[in-house]
Length: 528
Ligand code: ADP
Ligand code: XUL
Image (cartoon, rainbow, N blue to C red; front, side, top):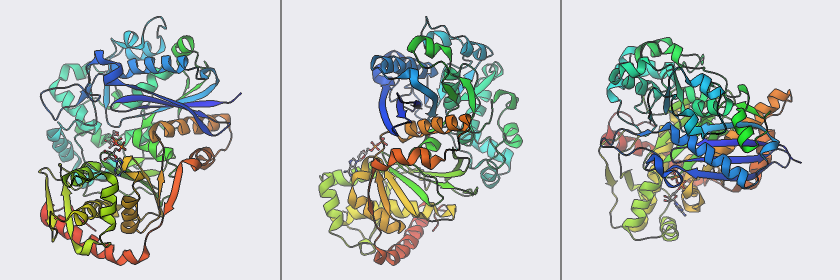
């Protein structure tokens, strides 16, 4: 008989679970429920409610709990050994907020297994929808809160990020301004992560330091709520925010609802949830300051562990708290696979032909360059899209294929310089990480070894690792993060792609040129 932990991931479009076998150090099972397809009665499209204003992105929180019921049902149907589970935790899409009335706490603790979760929880909300991270409708509130904090630099120094539309503080302020009565009747504001942990634990769970750092409300150094940010955001906010707490906090045993209804071990520990990016950090095994990950998905995301708190006072980088108690950086680039696909498709290529084309041009592309803003860009902030080419003929297929990837890697290198370190190794994930030509450019531009890592859902796996870590701590056993994570990840790592040392000088020069070009086109936010 083995011992297990469960890790959930409540993401934008689906809820997933990973079952980790602690004795055999392997993923024993995984499953997922898609909101649009499996729960069409909630009317979500790609996980959010359709509406007239494209800047507004809300989701119904009930769809997430309905998915939790559905997922437990599937786990039981597929004979997952739920009775052997020792601890449970999860990962939530960051920034999204859930508005609870005064009944919520007692309802979480008295769920009726004869009813569905959605039926049990239907009356606990002071706002029936939750703004999620895709919402960009709070520019006015960002400006007001920033003014209250004394400017961008002060805001970033205090909370780890300048004010962002999708961050929770500006979203709370918008709710308070537009629906003051509903705000007044809000007893607690939860994040997606702390809301789901409350359901699983049967009591209101604290917000953890990792996800709390994505609110523009937490002092990133003391990890307590920041009084000035609270004051600048909305009245009476402190009493409405549970936590913040260490990510390994255990609230108690799991809610009896899940034991009675699905056979989950009644004494399994309920570990609070964190945000998906902090969870992914441990899901990919990044425990040393030089360990970075670049996810090449629809967007490209770069993150890495930091021991010291360094903030990006001018730009678009974020600092969150890592599940280990360290810090982590995160930078999102919107024109990732999106841009690579646009170039590939413009020349009617498949990925093999795209990669072969890259190989036909010298490293550095003979100084030909592209600024690849096919869509509005987050980093650097580009609101009006447009591709710029420098000494680059739009008909030159190989040069354009190389130019788009070189541009992306140089932008990542330049815009991560505020972290004050260079990577010792980069773990590449996401759809494009199977492309060796792209990874070679990454290795050459960063002058770092690159290792692809085939983890299906790093956030859910990271949540399972967090559950295992908290369970060991609770048992009094000194088990390091590496000891929990390394045996599971070893088989998932691909071979190492080494940087070509002769390309170092080429890309040093080109990165400087790229920053100048970027500055000319975009303005103030370019740097090397
Ligand atoms: P998401 O961010 O939506 O989870 P994924 O990480 O699954 O995305 O990545 C999907 C993307 O990976 C696709 O949009 C595609 O452009 C890209 N991709 C898939 N295979 C390759 C390849 N061989 N080379 C480059 N890009 C690829
Ligand atoms: C990070 C961010 C997204 C969400 C959804 O700041 O907005 O990565 O966490 O995945």
